[in-house]
Image (tube, rainbow over all chains, first blue to last red; front, top):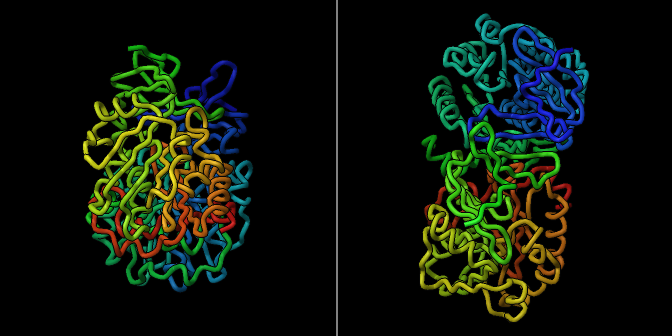
Length: 286
Length: 286
């Protein structure tokens, strides 16, 4: 096991994970233990146990999911599209190596098949082994794991899926192409005539440019485009955005269909998440 | 001008403000310039210009308000109670030395008088001078500045105010008493028979104990108690809570009364802010 020490600092005998991808803001998380650290062909993959957030998945030094708050992101990226579609049978997840999104999709009995296309098998492996609070050690037979580039995979699909979920990391490194117009266009092709997609579209505080661009691209491709939000404590700024593109169904009255158990989502959140702060609404022109 | 260097660190020739009041989580903000630093009789008061958030008020090393996101907290702690009360004429603000809350209250033409009771005159002075993005260099003649202990002041009021806003710092140091049952009881006395109060009740992520205790105390004293939330990027965890206690009026259909301009609040936010995440709802038992 190799350890990339640039993200781990020892200070006064304590071990800290340092998130410093922002030039002017750094977050230090105190670490109990490095559970696993390994360079994959795509990125540096690490599971560290942090005092504040428990076991945490770190890719290239950036926190992706923690045991304490990973459910928020995973519930929000799945339940909104799955409740919007009246009968989702075939679902494609691109990315989502922590398995948390797939786990939530499996809560829907009407879903028959889930293709999970993750470029990095190592992320799935360590998440299933060490991040069970998030992954639930996913073993549902409806999930097919496909380890390849999501952009290549989706090019070869045509009218196949009811719902596509793009659960990517930040638009640097292996995930950069998952924010391109061509990729969203290919997803539009991969969806059935009444299908819909959702993607994470970054922080409205620190990456308004990415959110705006994503919303504009999805608005060009889909007659129905909506941005919604969640509060993820371990993502800088707290506020996180998702963008939904839909060919036919509108995300309305979702609370009337809610009958699951969750830790973040409830009927109120399903209504509230579409109400964006005024500055975000103005920046998007919605 | 003195400088407390324990909160400012020079790293590789750059100056950083270090928030380390949490044992296992540290935030580093890169600083352009220390604009003012001075020990008052109550606390260490500093205005630093940060790269990410602009001029920022720091008390005893903890960020209170920044030029970039201070409006969120100040809009949310004022507009909810002022819209809930059908005719707020006399308003008391306890704390709020950055003047941002008073500035928002001044947007209501029907408000005739605002008592602003802040223990630390220095906070008001430096905010008016250096934090004008937040304070607006407040000079409305309806505002009376009273520099004394809010807990003492409120004990001597009886059926005086329509709305009381408790805009405190964290429950350590000078603000500790602003979270006590006795203080809320004195506020209840200071309010008219149809009056209402609001206080900031900390992070549901990191201080659920404080939020729960505040909600329980206010529920004992007021027939109507409600918790609402906002996303404040510079507060750890992002999510922040406020608790409203009201003798008569319920915070309902506030969006129908909204006719102001704001950067965070809009009709949607006025509806959404009362919908709490499921884990918070369950912890509060609401």
